[in-house]
Length: 158
Image 1 (cartoon, rainbow, N blue to C red):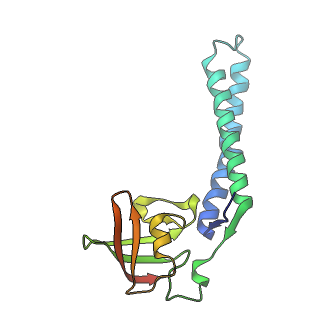
Image 2 (cartoon, rainbow, N blue to C red):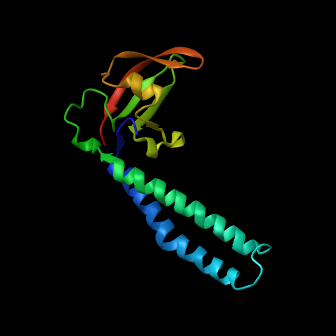
Image 3 (cartoon, rainbow, N blue to C red):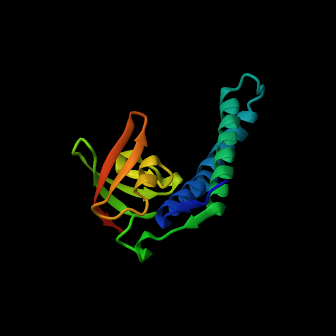
């Protein structure tokens, strides 16, 4: 990995919860189904067995991925940010674009992104453009449609 895996405490908990659910709940359930299916004879034509083995591989792959992300996590607590007049990781920002639309985003880790909730990655073009800006600043973000200017209206750390 060429950059830190910054994440909020809530984001880290989501990863840990998913790993726990997969490893402690779903995987044992699938193992039971595979064991039952294996006892039914010919495995080459046994859909329960084949699907179960495939699902176990998927679960194991996801657990390995989550384990690596959790181990590499650098937890950043937005509420502990001391320089609250500038935009950094964890900031909730309201900005206005060139179409005079007000947009509210929160800058979070790559594993926490959810555009429907306004959660954008700290490495996204918008977050990079907003980084270190203050209220009233105009920043330029490069988009596939060209450059767009954004005006920072509010900054908060919740």
